[in-house]
Image 1 (tube, protein in one colour):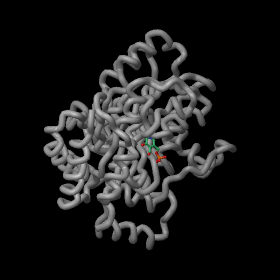
Image 2 (tube, protein in one colour; image 1 turned 30 degrees about the vertical axis):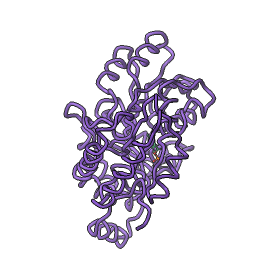
Image 3 (cartoon, protein in one colour; image 1 turned 90 degrees about the vertical axis):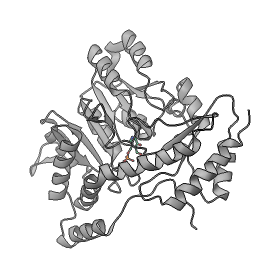
Image 4 (cartoon, helix red, strand yellow; image 1 turned 45 degrees about the vertical axis):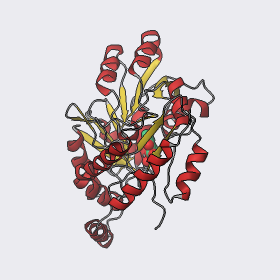
Length: 363
Ligand SMILES: Cc1ncc(COP(=O)(O)O)c(C=O)c1O
């Protein structure tokens, strides 16, 4: 049997057929499918509008740019995330401030309140991330942002479709951003989308991603080429149509893992609440010794891919002081395969091997 990958994009004959139709139509560049996807996506998330671009990183950069902040303004980000979270801030000429996270990897509202209560005048935006598919404490965080009058950007790249109190992640912030990268819960291969309520931003995003052209007229001579193609939009539309079902499959697999690992007392399992399981991240408790290299060899020999999301803190990459819990997670957690088409034999194999590995961890 081939190695079980950490992630795998969902495909079906229907998807292959619809991509084939788009290809045959000759409409490969941005067009009616991109626009249809934007409309349906905005309505699914619960925002007035959405605009698709070529990547999640582009979406983050344009969302930040739309806030019109002065160079070097501080933007708060969690210390545990994919590197694009910090890169987008720096590439837009802004200054990231890395705050600590909870054991689920999500921004800790207490650290945020503490930082803003002293320095809110210097902060131009808060960017939270819904990491691993688990919703951050976005209700509390949006209240804190409102109290200090700081705009909130939700980075939902890893959690498209997750709900908090019956509202979708991405509906709380002033702007929300999603990556459509191949392994995400809603994937198109490559791509990103920004959701927002202020309709005027559409023109800005449109011109900023289309070499400065808007409705055929050049309105910004230094625009960039960051468009979302109709081929990608066809895949995104298919995934959007099936998103709730695909996320439900992830949750069923996560429950099977939970049932198997529940009796182990040396780990912290991911919460089943408000989680669509982009990753299934296992945290090793403090008293137990863990080496990712050893874990990697063990799983590799069993034909299973495991990964650390992430083996670094963002602050350490950018030579700032690492935050405590983020730092702990970067050394003491790992993810096992989870994706909608994982079959019963594969689930059993992953559960069995993971259980045996974890049981063997020593104090
Ligand atoms: C939390 C987070 N933010 C941003 C990105 C960037 O998205 P993209 O790879 O589409 O540029 C990713 C993608 O991996 C991500 O996981």
